[in-house]
Each structure stands twice: as C-alpha cells, then as structure tokens.
Image (cartoon, rainbow, N blue to C red; front, side):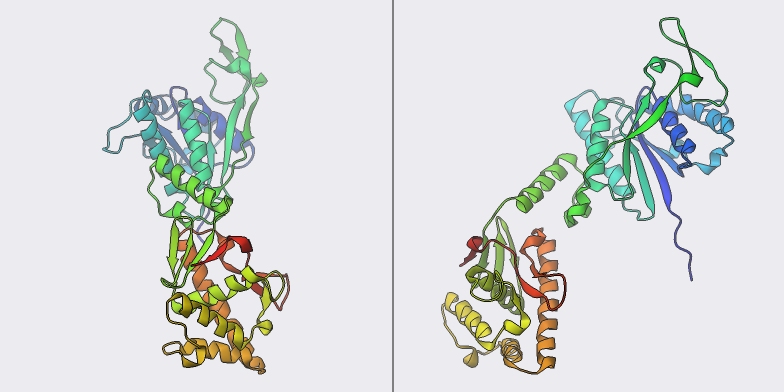
Length: 386
C-alpha cells in the first residue's frame, strides 16, 4: 500500500522594493510552528533583484541570517531563484515595474495563472500574503485567491509596529538589536510586534463552477465569466422546455437532452408547474401512474406537430416500460422506476453542469429521509413550455 503524498505548505508573496514582508511573515509562521515547505514570490524585475540581493545572497542574505538565528536548515524551506516568479507579458517580456494600464493587466493575468497552477495540487496549501509590491499586486493576489482558493488556503496581511517602518527591519531576532530610523532616532527589535492578520475571503470554487478549472487565465475574462455565472445563479430566469428540439433553456444557455432525459425532466417540470399532485409539485415515485407518462408524451408529440397516444408510439419502448412500471403494484417495478429516475436525473445534472446551469434547475429531492419526493424547485410561474 502506497503512502499518501505529503501535504506541502506554500507561502505565496507579492514583493517589490521592500522584500521585508517575506521574512516578517516567515518569522510569524515559524513562531506558530507552521514553517512553510516552500516560499514563492511574485515580483517584477526590480523586485527580483531586491529579493536575490537582500534575502538570498549567501552567506549573509536575510533569509540565511534568519535560519541561523532560529536554528533552521535553509534547505528545509525551498526558497531560491527558481521560486521567484517574474511577472511578464503575454509575449514573454519581463515587467521591470508596474506603471501602465497594460502592465496592470499583464500582472493580473500572470498572478491568476500562478495561483491557478498552485491550487491544482490537492496536496498543497497556500498561505497568500496580500502585502508587498505595488498595491495592485496585493489586490490581484486577493482576487486570484477568491477565484481559485480552496478550503485549506488562507490569506493574510503583515502588520508590523509603526516605528519600525523605514528601518532595516526584516524580522525579530532572538537577540535584541538597535536599528536606526530615518530621523536619526533608534528603535530596539525587542519592542517589535509582527502579526499576520487573517483576511477572510469568499471562495468561488464553492459554487461548484467547473469553468474555473477550464477557462483561460486572463483576469478580465475570468471576472466577466464569474459575474455572468453569479448573475445567472442569483437572478430569476424562465425555464424553457422546447419539445421540438429536446432542449432546456435558461437565459442564453441551452442544453440538448436525450429523449428519455427530456421526457423525465418534463414530467417533473410539468408537475411543478401545475402543482396538482404531490406536495408543491414534488411527488413520491409511488404517486406516479401510467397516465402521468401518457399525458407527458401527448404534450410532447402535440408540440412537435403530431399528437400520439402512448399505446401507438413507435420508437419509445423505454417510455412504455416506465409507464408500465408506474402502473405496477410490484415493489421490484417501483424500485426499477426509482433507479431509472435517479440515474437519468444524475446524467441531466451532469449536462447542466457542463453548460453552467445553476444546480437549482436540477431534478432534486425534498425531505431528509426516505421515501424522497422528487421534483424541480423552480418557481412554477417561471416554467415555460414551448
């Protein structure tokens, strides 16, 4: 039996001209007993040079100094030139700084791509740091975490005592040190307070949005797609059933179903629309009869321009079987009918998900114990038969 892959914790930082936030955050995590396995830095060309010079130069870079101060093997934390990600444009040009609208868009796209890729590893956890670098970098990092962050991921901001701003302060060393301020006064590191303030954020992955795993990494396009999805999920739209095309349409999204899928979906949609049977249109399978299937078939064939009775239908043997099971008194027939409805409902839900229809349009159940009632929870006044 193979061992489960070890979980990997990643400290993800945006950095600019002051890479102090990286070691400040590292200090807090080590004090909390949560030493990261890896440090990833997103930065510009100027920021990269700062990180390499101030933190990663050997032997006296602040990262190596920190490890010596706190008796850490620097090899335990993967942090080197390979984990420093340079922001770049779509054509591969490295961003020296973020000064223009185009630079902002490139930074947003690249940050989204980094977070999206890191979040693909189910055995990782991301601790993102919305501090450091240009303010827009922190904003885009937070936005990317909202789009791709998972339950095990978190977002923080570094808080440091105000009097240490503008000093050569990178972390709180175990031995007190005196640091000079710009105005010539002194501060002592023993008085420093560093904290990682958690920033709560909404994880859109919880909306079960399959598109989040398939869309491009262009930030603006992702936001537009997300807003369209949320508008569709939040707003009230007509549920249109087109028996001529075997399609279900909500707003501008249509799903073509198989004949069996469409007939079963229409059965529950019609029961919900009329609410003449069951509880608010939700019914027990035992409440369905042969006539329910016969009525649905007649409605469909009438809409298709050629009304037929179920008894004279050609090519719909499956429907005659369902109707016979509904008319049967044998428990095994009712069980088979229930299993068919459950399986078909699951396939319909998969198609709706693929076409980004919110879950509320699925065939669902009511009640918290068996036997369940089945139905469609759409507002009856919004169900339209074409």
